Image (cartoon, rainbow, N blue to C red; front, side):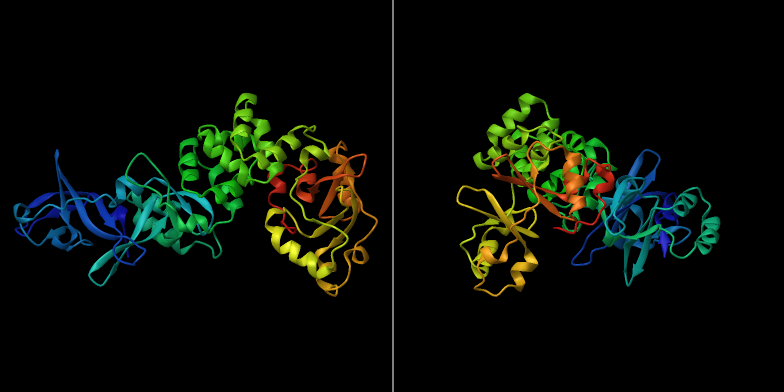
Length: 418
């Protein structure tokens, strides 16, 4: 094993032993199916001149003096390709995403490993030991490494577990990024909060619309507004259509009124109608925090028919722990849980299955009152009705808790109802 910091500045000599300069950078690129980039060339500088020499023309890279197979004038220069990485220029000291530890870190050094006749970038060093090596204190770094306690946050991160952040240089995120797509939206939101405005915008551009919507729902509305500030209106409108109506309403409430109206006009008519309805109620009322995405059936169905109904519409609901029963005019007349439905015999009428006493809140009840009702009756969601008992939506427990504990804490609670 060797480190990039140990190679930079080493003398380079040709086949005649003539020194041709010092190593300034190392070029690497992915080859074949191997996820780790392999060294393909070195950049050598002598005064104002620089030479990019193929790795194949090196006798040894890990040596006190880097030797060449031929004289300098006999070597055909390496022509860099678009996807080549300059390890010093493009990677060293840059921020990266550790997709395993789910954090943003800075690259202090790179570990290189020889496998057969190739040299690969094996690990990223994001710890203080890498900085010590950069200062020429490799011996001290080795002694300190032996004293690192088990279970400490690892400073070595496998290249497999990193994503390169966008920059104004050659480093780009893969689009689409498989590793980022595998992360939970809450993890992506935490990563984005650690980035600069330009970096977060570039990263968001790599996400598909559904993942982007899920990620935005994990951050505060004012931060959502900040993230979409420079996005085209058409994209933001599509994004709002992917978000839950209550989340979309919260975001629109943070934007300038003129832009909010423009975005609502660009949204699909049904989505815009749901969001406008929520925006019509006070922000801290049951109507203002409810979602219009819920599951409701009529009492004439039986258990088997209700299950078929759930299969058709469950993807549109925010939670399906509770199924509400409504009459022809959408008045709330009952409720049953998903477990009630699963355990019922197929032919059991919903009218016999449902609970006739339903705990609900009014559209204009305060958020505190909603939270108290949910806590009192140990509910995961509560229906929202008007004075005529017409069902307008539901408030989930996390949205109710938003008024009691900070959103940043609430987002870290288990989402038991999803």
